[in-house]
Image (cartoon, helix red, strand yellow):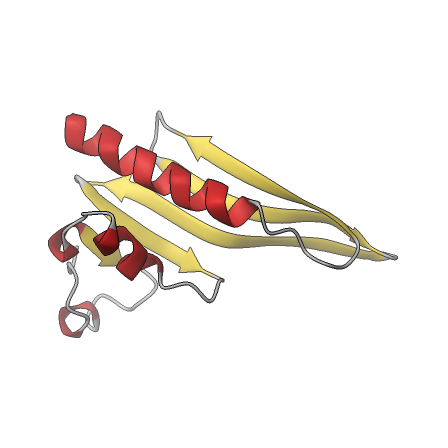
Length: 111
């Protein structure tokens, strides 16, 4: 259980760090979503740029089967390498945005 709590803290700190960077355009809010009961974590933009609705997920990570699953990364930061630098072994990180048959070539966990 301590491992899961540590991974939750790592993910939260990464999302909080990225939430500090607000878009330079429009009235856009940055929202951090922590669902610690089901282990889903997201960073989303929501708001308006003039008359255009702005909404999108920038980062989505889950914890499943004691591993961190990077579902989506819409940033320029390599989230997997950031997690490794925090001490998460590559064997506990799944690059879920790659097709399952490609994951074996990533150097990270397959599932």
